[in-house]
Amino acid sequence: MAWQRQHGRHDLPWQGTKDPYRIWVSEIMLQQTQVGAVTGYFERFMQRFPEVKSLAEASEEEVLRLWSGLGYYARARNLHKAARMIMENHKGSFPRSAEEMCELPGIGRSTAAAIAAFAFGEHGAILDGNVKRVLARQFGIDGFPGAAKVEAQLWALAADLLPAAEIEVYTQGLMDLGATVCTRSKPQCVACPVSKGCVALHTGRVRELPSPRPKKAHPTRQATWLVLWHGGQVLLERRPSAGIWGGLWSFPEFDGRDVAQECLIRFGCVISGHREMPSFAHGFTHFRLEISPLVCDVRTLESRTASPGSLWLAPDAAIAAAVPTPVRNLLRRL
Image (cartoon, rainbow, N blue to C red; front, side, top):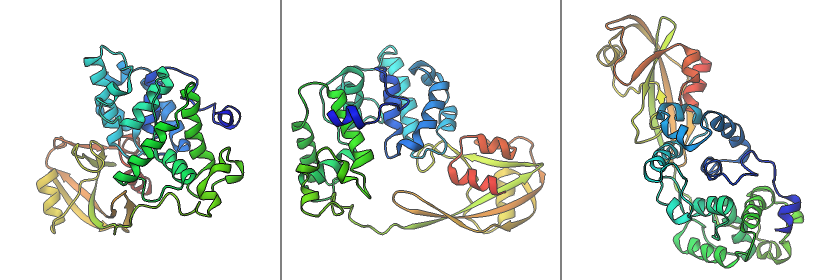
């Protein structure tokens, strides 16, 4: 705690407030995402949605557009659903206890404890990825932290270590220690305030702990995108809510053999030809996606109105829409 006051982070845009809404949004954005990537998104999000009411009243499309590029889009959909639940079930007031917060979509035990600590001073343990790493090294905990038995051991440690007072400083200190000193690679052990008691450091196991996730072969999936061009516009299709990039706009996928027939039947487009672009890959947590774009030049449209769930957009407008990163990158290349 003394280290946090002197060396910790104090100027992040979501600090210096007791507003549970701002703290909540920041904690959700920081799940599986580094601070440097989050800062700009957080500031833009707060400008557009300064309180829970404005977020609840927005469309999912607009929320996803502001989230576009940050990844893990289920976080944004859950944030939007939770805002509406707060308005409907809590009369617009953010729940005050971690237990109540856990009833909202997208908020787990650790996130709820962090929000409750920073906003209301509630006494509770956190256990995000950074904290797991700190505790595993400090106490020499073997095993993958995501395994049930190891995680239970870490939760027990996290609870036992809680201070009697100033939970906000302690919680922020743990987060800062993991994010800036006890990092995954190249940890700064000489700057660590608790290095004297670190089991991993004194047994030469800093690189080994925490134990990595058991390796699994990441499968590769194939996707062919239809890039339909007509009158200086491209056709985008909204993806279903379930699955990858749920609710975002993307190029239509094609899994057949006759490109011309597919374009005519699905989109009412008569094409004059198509050409292949070089394939490229995009990595997800559990698989790798190999994408092959087919650029189709549309000669005529059977209907000027796009089919439900699809939209013709100029490239600049498409880039600014709620599209996943690989779609935006391909649009820029085109």
